[in-house]
Image (tube, rainbow, N blue to C red):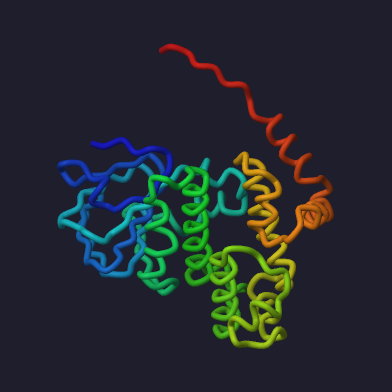
Length: 281
């Protein structure tokens, strides 16, 4: 049986052993893509239709009964969400992995072509920085978890808002996360979506409980912190990547919202990395 690393996203056909078996100590999500997938879990037969996400609890032996070409497997340990505490309790105790026989959820969230283009294919590029590959996987998992919670968790009833506003908010998030840089005006995204700024503000406020601008700022800061903490990319390049024309504008923005300059944040993050030494086993 193959041993999987702590996290990953791969074609199902690439990670099965000779017996078409997978048993991962962490959490797994199978995406059937365009295929019907038949499997055994704890000797129980499961038939999954196309466009299905199948949540698999830890240490669940899965044997696949058919060959697959498009199906994708995502797997991770909770350490992947160590800086996303809001997800940890949902992953450990929520609806996703509660059933030992797995849980199938229809994919009404994102078209197959978009999943392949924006998440799967980029992570398979060998030249892609491992940090970016990891962040792509985390973003994809967050998207699946949030949408599943909003659709299926009865405890989330107070988040079940008007379907039209939910759809507008989701289109905004998809646009925001897939553009090359951030624009900090709500009007820009409203125009892209062919709706009024007021409609976009109402949708984001209804679904996420904050203004459109606040959401944009939060996502920009999240990306900035990841790049400052996890890469050696020059701060000037990070500022340009985020959409700032001048590094000084980015520095002022970052300090206003975090209390420290980008350089101070990076230096502090580096100082917290423990010294590592190789030890012969």
